[in-house]
Length: 295
Image (cartoon, rainbow, N blue to C red; front, side, top):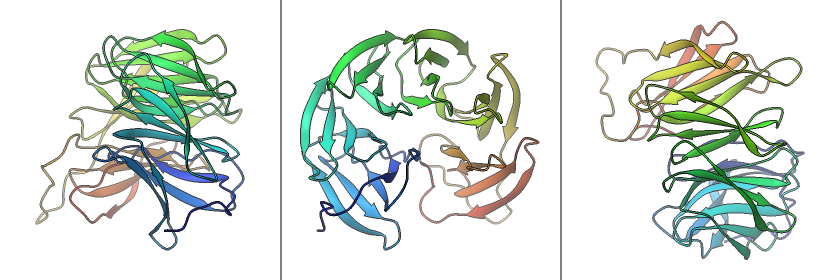
């Protein structure tokens, strides 16, 4: 196994947990790597997407869930469900250098645009977002939320953390400057993966939400704080068999860097669909292999 001491780890493609949540920290890149956590073991695999081979391994993190990387690649942050900690890993040696105790059992995590804060979703009732100071490697604050949190995301401008609760069906929006709750939005279904469409000035225009049992996604206007659209993904073509085993029908979405296309995963159809932005017209799709794709 090749350890990455000689590689400048400045950009990573990260896939937190078995659900494969896709994030890409904005930083200059010498190498691109995939980080795959392992909820059934005690390691994190580092994969070269060019060769599709494992090129590194982080050990001694049991039931790892979410992962995030410092903008300069110097640190890797992994939520540890077994120990109820945020484990901090040296980006060169791939060794755990600190375990930060959390307020409850964690799920996924997100890192601030400047790398000064890591936001940890606390799924354990009553729910919270733990704020980790990356300079001191300590828990700086616990922000109470409406319901246990599964996924936290940082908006494109870095001004807000958006944290979704499956159980309470609530979107919790936190101001990163004050580290207080800014607003909440109740939905009719549990909150699953999310992504954003930014305005020209970088502020958040729309919030896209995947919801429990919805084969599609909802669109929320970030300024008015209201749902403005709900899109259903295409039905499976005749002669094809849906993937019935698994969790949500649609799990995983992303907006391209040019802000012109929304990519949405269908686990049910084992397909990836593309919608034009901002008009949200279906412009294409691709069949995927495997037993129901999701990230």
